[in-house]
View: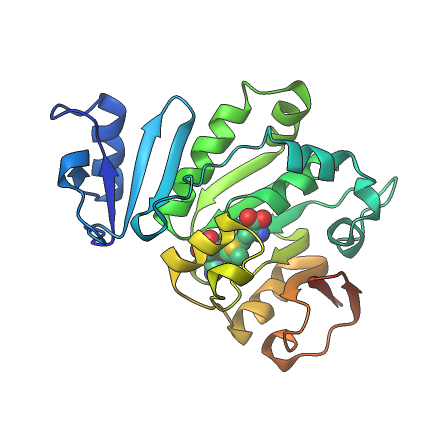
Length: 256
Ligand SMILES: C[S@@+](CC[C@H](N)C(=O)[O-])C[C@H]1O[C@@H](n2cnc3c(N)ncnc32)[C@H](O)[C@@H]1O
């Protein structure tokens, strides 16, 4: 199916094999730089030496979003008392307890990567084809990155699937993790440009109580849901434990 909001930018009238293959797989029109018009397409993907990137024409001054696990911010987060971080505490990781995690809302994979850096085997589900392609590309390049990054990514397994439809095909995991999209905030209030671009692309806020019920059926230990600090409880269900940070919190629902 053709995605009308996204194109794939090619530099020459004869696209590369990689460009043609990706355009065909994602159902995207190939666009030459001279054919870009304001807002048409709204977004474009681009393949270059740095990998696959997503650009928003309205944010022309902004660099594109690429999944790069070998970056300073993630590396600092991974080294900086990783086990003291709320995400890691919320999943219940301890010295001799390394949970197997299902990340139902993979996005650009940062949270899953930190879990993998902490030693967890992580299965990631992403339902949006563009986001899935960005993440898949980042994971493939990470194999050639630093040894710690490559080792962590080898513990990550990515699937293109919607958790709500795919849950019945999955085994049980120790922990099921959900990070639903927050409602779109104005650019000036954005915490991270990559998440802002994702919010614009997906233009959705996920809140489905059924998903929490499904998640609890797949978790043998707990379900962890990331929320914005001030957000109401997911599906109005009171968590058993909550780990609060400066801008977000991790709500824990114990499986019984
Ligand atoms: C807020 S982002 C997740 C960010 C991620 N935790 C990270 O560290 O980059 C939410 C992502 O979950 C995906 N998503 C939402 N509901 C989903 C579902 N039911 N199944 C699979 N993916 C889903 C969206 O397409 C989006 O890419």
